[in-house]
Length: 191
Ligand code: IMP
Image (cartoon, helix red, strand yellow):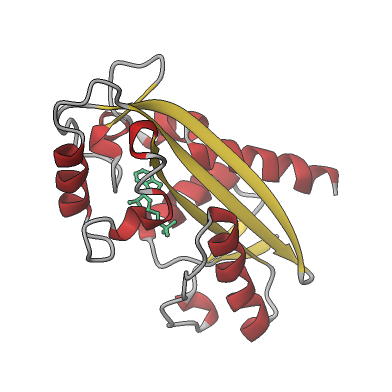
């Protein structure tokens, strides 16, 4: 089954393709001829996820999935949340986003946080939502070089390494996106 993934984030494509396996072939936006920067103007993960998937469906009538995800820090009332990618101002500047977050948490003891992912699956124009959450904490400093985004400062509960110190094979089964994808695969296998 072919599914377009409504993202320009190469890391997400790689993670999701590994999660979905051979039964599903992910097409990138460029592969379907979409070179737009898809707007994300909603203020919830669900809203943005649906907005991205609908953008593709309305223009290309192709079955697609979109993930909207981010980091929610307890003591910052869920920030950066939907602003995770542009927390420090520039979209996708991970180094600056991490710097800002570590600065905002300076001296704060409660560093509990979670990653959340909402995946929208649009099949024949009908939407289905799948959510995944992984709890953890924000470390005092960066650790590891793998992954992307806030991975170097997020340590999942029950582990003593950050996501950036894990291989994709280790991160994927426990990650927010991995959990959301597992629910989606269950759904697709039942359909
Ligand atoms: P989106 O592309 O609008 O969903 O933005 C997601 C943003 O949340 C990314 O740019 C990262 O800053 C952050 N994020 C989401 N998932 C992850 C992850 O698995 N690791 C690290 N950061 C993530």
